[in-house]
Amino acid sequence: MVTDTLLEAELRELAGSVPDPELPVLTLAELGVLRDVRVEGPGRVTVRLTPTYTGCPAIEAMSADIERVLHDHGVPEVSVVTVLAPAWSTDDISAEGRRKLAEFGIAPPRAHSADGGPVPLTLSVRCPHCGSTDTELLSRFSSTACKALRRCVACREPFDHFKEL
Image (cartoon, rainbow, N blue to C red; front, top):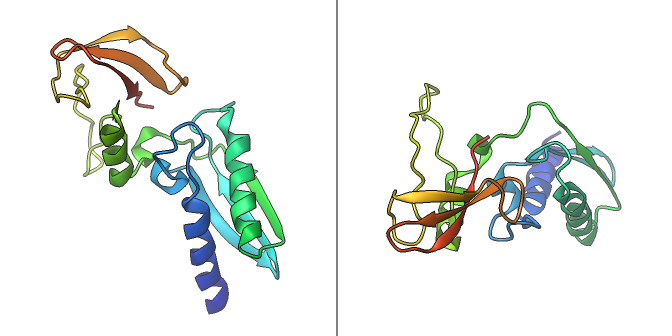
């Protein structure tokens, strides 16, 4: 039904605008974890969400925030379902999301190949502060499991690097 399609698009936009609880500079749509929004019937919506990794503690906060936003928009019954397949990968982060990460001081994951071919292997991570690729790993884990802590050798500034998955 056309009205359901329009409503689903509107609700998807609302759910997608929810900020990630661990990286509030990104929305769930930009992070690529929002998989689907379906109108199941009058006043009933199902949202499918994929965590960045199995056991991600932020999935509960994401679900609660989506439920709140859709309830505030007049949807009385919201069901947020966690789906694990297909698995989320850093390829799911939008170009805008990558830009926002870098602007926020977090080195974004390397972009995937636009033509679906192999991703060029580079061992360097670009500093989000000065742009140098002369960086070093300080810790494989940072404030969250999906980020590593690095330092730029050129400007000496520490920064998070969103690891490729």
